[in-house]
Amino acid sequence: MAARSDGRTEPRRRFLILHGWQNHRPVGHWQRWLAERLTAAGHDVCYPQLPDPEFPVLKDWLAATEQALARAPGAEQAVVAHSLSCVTWLHLARQGSVHLPVGRVLLVAPPGPRFLAETAELRGFQLPTDALDVIHSGSLAVPRLVCADNDRYCQPPADAVYGRLCDVDRVNGAGHLDMAAGYGRWLSALRWCEDATYRLNAE
Image 1 (tube, rainbow, N blue to C red):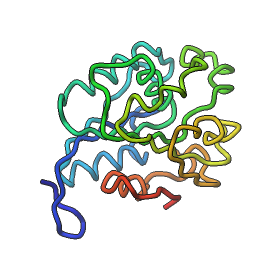
Image 2 (cartoon, rainbow, N blue to C red):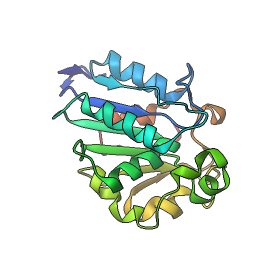
Image 3 (tube, rainbow, N blue to C red):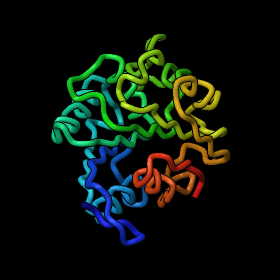
């Protein structure tokens, strides 16, 4: 059991945190902060460095994600994906895996189809047209999508692109929800990890 901030205990969970394009898990990023906080609370946390983040290859990111999932067979797992890892997760859900489903999924600021198509390093991550029809297969529950209206990597905003089959929290003015947008600590992400019903916001 893990201790909560209110002194009560909660079941030990496993969290898989997946970073995005050009991300080397830097100090100061909310995902690193989240990994540290969850670990300190007694949870099992996996925060892998995905291969070649500057020039990612979809099959390599899929393999690394599967490997991370395989480290805890049978455990209740929650996935927190940011940016390009959101798209990787959708590909994994579409193709299927013996490690799916997981308990819950948080997709934060996925890049849009136009950005993927126009960025040479990311064209291999473009989603097929039927991808959204299988979004549920990677999770026992409806995935939570968190996005902003002014994300330079996704226009139109991600809720218009991916929100049809997701539970959506829109945080206007939050950009790509990354360090550049001021997200070094993000209490909402931690609160969602503690309570799946929590609605994420800018705090």
